[in-house]
Length: 114
Image (cartoon, rainbow, N blue to C red; front, side):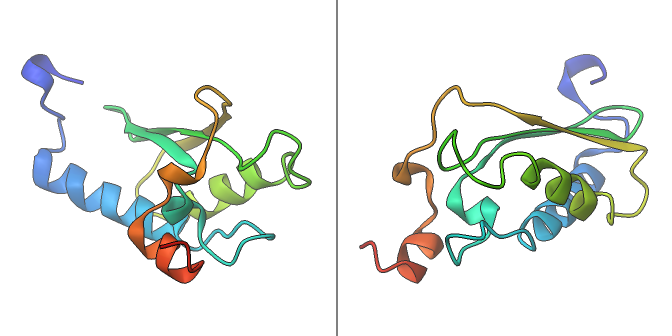
């Protein structure tokens, strides 16, 4: 980031880009839960650097998830569909561990968890 925390794209363009990234993340679903990974709270960080490289930290609902080896690739492929990005890196992290409190209200509603 540039001085004073401003992005060279400008805040409006960065917000637009972040919204586009989130829209693509919402196309990726956990195969065992009928809710997208963003609403499930599996995305911990989205960072776009000055060179339009995206760094994403994500987790899984459980470390032994059967798609642990595949899901980061699904996320990378989805985000790469956003025009103008130079690169997308997806990091699988387990700290802090995921728990249902990370789900959005939309996900809770979908799963009848209210």
